[in-house]
Length: 173
Image (cartoon, rainbow, N blue to C red):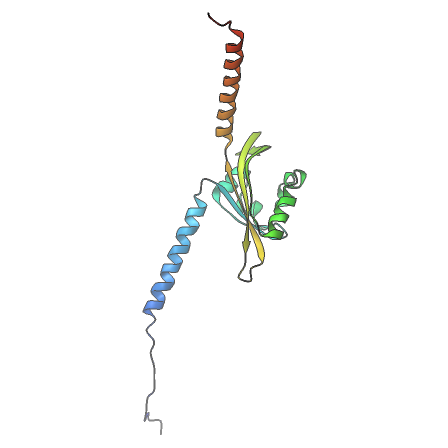
């Protein structure tokens, strides 16, 4: 009557499980920091709507916008030039085929870092598949190569001038 005659119990050591969960969390945090501090701008868009789901710091600097102005909105709505230049078709083809698209040097007139002008980028559209193998996101990675392209163009211009000059000088006998 109200007395315990037998006691049954079990215990599970969850220490190893907790350590593993902590390692995974640390690993995810490190990866997040790496992406956020990348010298390239990175955005993850949902497919096929092209809604901006995530982006790193460099992306927000490049487009001169705050995260709350971009996240959850259509990239086509935010940046009409995507459609105007036919980049939406390239994005959709990458989503449809699952094949990445790389453009090593793309010239664009745009406002970047808050200034208007011509800029050059290397960009990659990398489809991302879910566990079922269906492309449900696309990663857009772009690297500003404006300085390198401008330097190359300056060297090419100087070489043309030197060639003209050397062709104009009479040959010494």
